[in-house]
Image 1 (tube, rainbow, N blue to C red):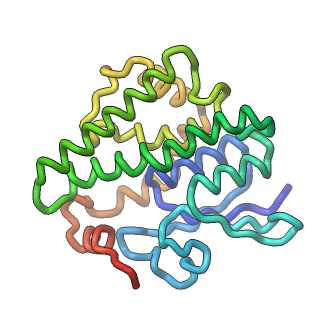
Image 2: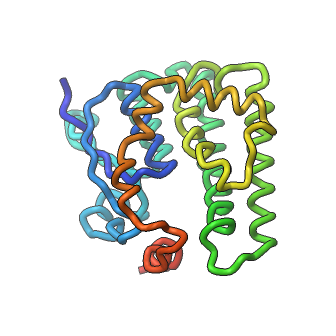
Length: 233
């Protein structure tokens, strides 16, 4: 058995992508919690692995050529693990392009827009209606794209893949984004389908206790300052 992969992690939609993938792969891994509300993402040891001071990141001691490798950015990690283990990320070019399209769609669209909807709806110190409407409506549009895509298929890119793993975490907090899954029946069916997979449930559960120990972010002004007031250092 290969040595466990170190996963630098906090239980967020981006972190869940990797715990779900590792659980699906049944790959050994160990969690290195990076408490982003306390600023642990700025520690020099973590920045050496993830220079964008964002989690998740991994260190695989059995990297290419038998040498350790670190990977940051959740989409890149999913691609790396898919290639390494040969699962959930097709080797066939046409099938891989199909997966990559939806993986990049999540990275460039669903995640950032849902994150902004979260921010303006729940954390912004002043309620700016334009910002709330702008991002709530854009998430609604993106949910509509998924709903249409899933009208005639069970998964986003053919077979179950990293594309589904990347998106599920951003649909879990749909209520905080101002969305109702009943408005998107095909998306809702996909959401429920993924929740029937044991590895998805296990991946989402990783670190739940750690997160629950923290103060409510909507009320924790010091944590908000760390998360939302960052500039170049």
